[in-house]
Length: 361
Image 1 (cartoon, one colour):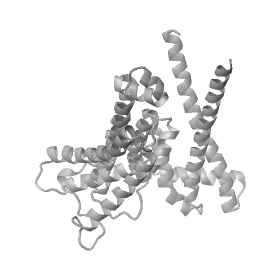
Image 2: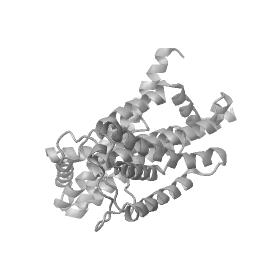
Image 3: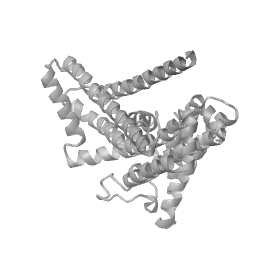
Image 4: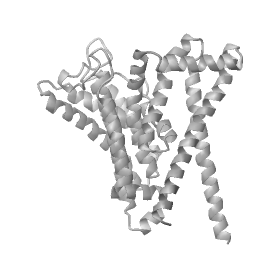
């Protein structure tokens, strides 16, 4: 196979992935129209117009809504990228949620320290969040590589530990009186809000966009990325080719955790400005699973997928104003994931049949 043929196959595979994701989104929106018809007792055309109009107005229809959609999308870029790295290694890092929480919490604790100049305080706070995410992902990654324990079970447990540890710190040593939160972090630890202090959109959006490019280069243009993808495609073949599987499992989990921790830190530094008591998970990490699946773990695709899910999440309030249950948003997301997962399943079945046919021959 020459170079031109290889490039053509890569482009064809990329187009196929994009087409399947787009088709899943279109089908999910089409199916959701019938639920609006059932909820509102409207005809198909009227229901479709009401659904699409309310989603558009609630996410992009006004300047304020457009800005808040980007605010909702930004953490999903980080968590989507974190899941993408893990998926490329054949790992299911469901602990991105806990790593995001720990990155946010540690960033708050460092951000509360007074008297540090901003040029030092901002990198220090961001670095603390990244380190927290790395540690929180590195533990189950090490156990997976060295002991062979299931990363899904371990990371789920780490999620709950992260949530309850955060609540202990928020309601204990760092509790702000008469509140369920910590004090606001120092001004010197906050990310710049480029549309004014009353607007939550901040430079973390550009950090996320830049990170997507960095992750793309890491996965497709470096030796580290090649080894990570090789382990994900076929561990036995990678090991036969001299690639250290255990090292790459730990490395992929640490990188994934670092990205999630960075997302949590930037969310605190730019949007939340404090840690609050958690009565449940933030769901940024769990939504990141859907973001990565729709993007087919392509870092650049994660950007557009995150905007899609950010728009759907933020527009749920507008849907209720039009008399549409906001659960329609979760229905759309669920149907999208179902179609994407179905495509993975059929591809696996087809691969097994091909292998079986080769063995029989």
